Length: 342
Image 1 (cartoon, rainbow, N blue to C red):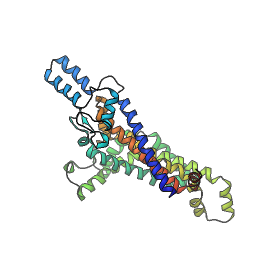
Image 2: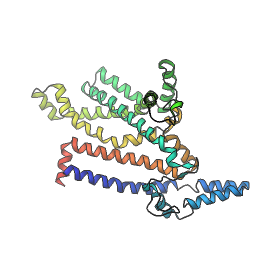
Image 3: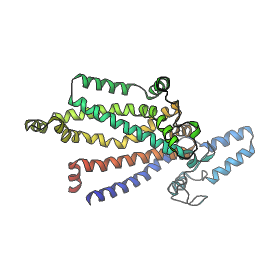
Image 4: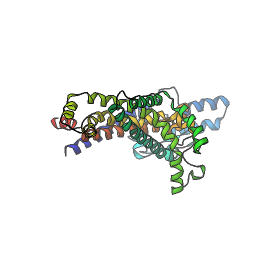
């Protein structure tokens, strides 16, 4: 019951935080002077294209861009009726992309689930690599195993993602016949899901998963190693050793559980960091994720497209943070007792 109440509390907190974030996102994307349509109107007037000016003015009225900023926000979020009634984010209408001249939902539809898929694969890669390497490096501290793991970690942190992408781009295709660019073969784009399409996506994800997850795995491995070494130096470990507890059991039962807390807490930052950090990788590898759309939207001041992508990243952050909080409550008795005391 206590856990359920905490889960409901965290969910409500997440919704309130999302509202605050939406205000900040809307204000920030409107900080630069003008917008896509006002810039277009100025260019059309300079070239004497009256018909284009009339169309742009109609779009400004249709999407409430001629109203005060506070009213624009309420309409965009769906808290107030606009020219089309209540039709904002909370109603599932993500707006219109002036850059691509299409609804935002159509543009990011396929890109959203591909973005989530690629980044979940990268997160899985981070944990699968960082957990064993960090534990082994701490258990074999100041040995060749520790030094080798540290070398791999520093190499992963020091190598820029786009450079690693280019290297794997070339050598992966040359020696392993891995596909070049994209997340699926062109013949499957726009086609319904099938087993050949799934296989094509899985093969295409090998290089992006490795590239996006390498730096995160290296950083997390170093953090876990440091936490493990700190726990291994504490008196309760010496007491457990003196009682004759087997090294593997000792490692898993006490120090690993305590050192695992920051490891779990990083879930909240890992997903959005990978989405934002993979923008350049997506451009280099030609991935059909939301990264290139975000870059194009920010460059052209396409506010509805940019606003939705930033809100999507914020939602990933809040969901990841909520998941990590739930896992920490289940993992660490000290957190459970602290919540009960409140």
